[in-house]
Image 1 (cartoon, rainbow over the protein chains, first blue to last red):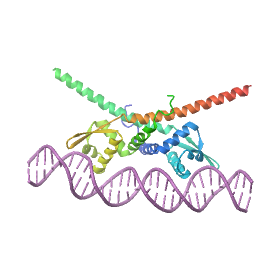
Image 2 (image 1 turned 120 degrees about the vertical axis):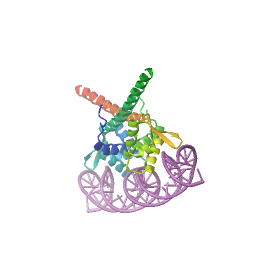
Image 3 (image 1 turned 90 degrees about the horizontal axis):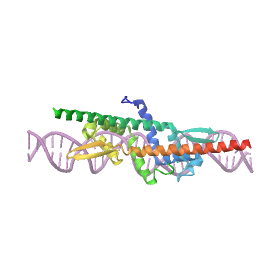
Image 4 (image 1 turned 180 degrees about the vertical axis):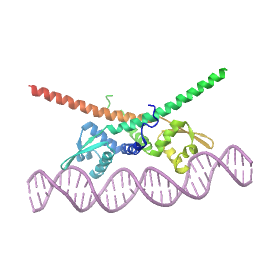
Length: 121
Length: 121
DNA sequence: CTTTCATTCACCCTTTTGGTTGACTGAATG
DNA sequence: CATTCAGTCAACCAAAAGGGTGAATGAAAG
């Protein structure tokens, strides 16, 4: 809690990759589908979208590189499974931002209180 | 908790905008600066980056459109202030995803238990 | 009244992104 | 052995993103 850099500089690249991956609506829909239906084949996922299998395949690769899904290749079939862990990194970044913000407000409050005390002299 | 669509379809566009805005490292750095130092002028923010004032200005506009900062224009000076609320929408989406995922696992568990019961017959 | 200052606006350029189509692979099936 | 099927790879394209520069604006200060 006291560290101002809980989310390390080296994590920033990864964080960017995860957030970029999750910021696309199609990819978020993919994650939702996977959460709902469990591990699924690429083709099965693709049926839900009004776009070519190829495009869906590319979206999956983006999610995979970000660690948001893993792939288990069972011969010609590729089984895709959602991974929740990477989202923690985003959560952590938010928490850090909010805590920095809260700390500043507390410090500000402290100063104001001191000034008020001064006024009493 | 029971609604499968706590984050409404109409929110998806907004969610995308917020996540896209927050997925850029420069913009995240801006948010951190604002959380640390409080409301700041555009020029003051720009000094922290190795890029033109114009580019920083553009990044700020992206954050502003996403609602992650607000601008108070005091004549030639524009005071930028961070807004934490929009992050809640991302939190909510994550929560929803995780709950969908958990629900599927629970249901799966239920089925497995029933099958085990069947085996006992 | 010219200069300065803080910032945006309007273009321009390059890279990335999201999508397409067409060919390739390699097991399984007729 | 030809075909189908699941999926990727490669090339291509349009649009968006991220960066830069050079005006323009408009109050304040000399």
